[in-house]
Image 1 (cartoon, rainbow, N blue to C red):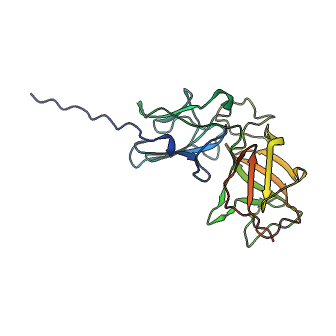
Image 2 (image 1 turned 90 degrees about the horizontal axis):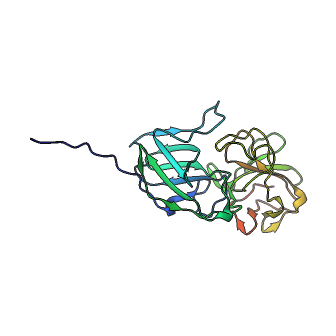
Image 3 (image 1 turned 120 degrees about the vertical axis):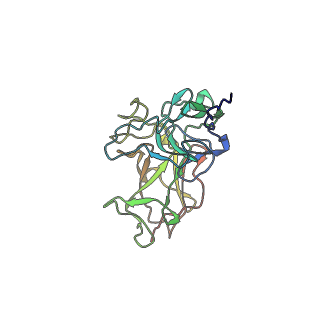
Length: 255
């Protein structure tokens, strides 16, 4: 008599090196409430994809098509899942003082390896402009039109620069359940440690009008910045929280 066993689906496969910042795919350390990506195999059903956001969502899901990302023993909020990539949100409640959090992926009860990631109070990353990847994603504060070389910023105006990894916040959002999409502005805790440089020169802190969460968007921060008249043409922009700085290579279109 012959017996045919049922093949068990492959367990998720990835490594700590495959966990990166979702904005620019750089390695850690990462700050609480950063958007991260995991790259691997067998992270979900072959060929399947699932989105965690919708027009009416107020809380991100922690399970998409049977896939979960477990951070320090608890499911993390999910933006996107496929068999080779997951985008997820690090919980705001993580404390860098308590050491490196553990991360692992489960899919339909099959668990991948437990890995550790490095954590910092702040680990900024800026978003490149789609199609113009040498420029930062930013908007004019007056009308929220996108800043591009064809529609540049000018000295003296307020611009909105988008980022991830600015760390914990004060105000209404603090303490809201993990995965809840913020409905109100909330300034970062470490505002005194925030530095913005344009063309290598530190911007006067008085020019930073707001640094905190972007309402209606999970994991997204914004910096409302008055552009100095001395900024020059297309200065490189970098953002730092303490010793952790965003990578080089992005310019703010200024004329």
